Length: 91
Image (cartoon, rainbow, N blue to C red):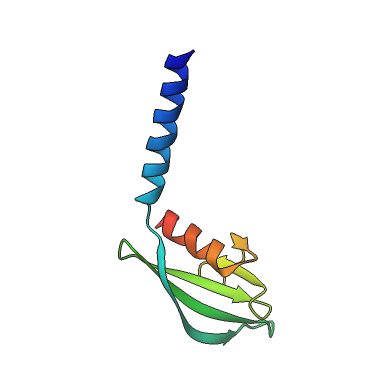
């Protein structure tokens, strides 16, 4: 039983160490407001990550919906930090 407990603890420590090395968002910079052909408005942002990557992010409905990509509503979250973390994880 002790052997499995030690293995589980070691696995958990390795997993948490791997998470700490993942890229994290360092800044979110607003670039511009864009009006689409159907008169919907979104705001274009660029997320900078700790690994040097830059990822496009859009906010819709007055920052109520945050989505990956510029002007695309396919992968979305309700909070800016969640979409920024996802963007850096995918970068």
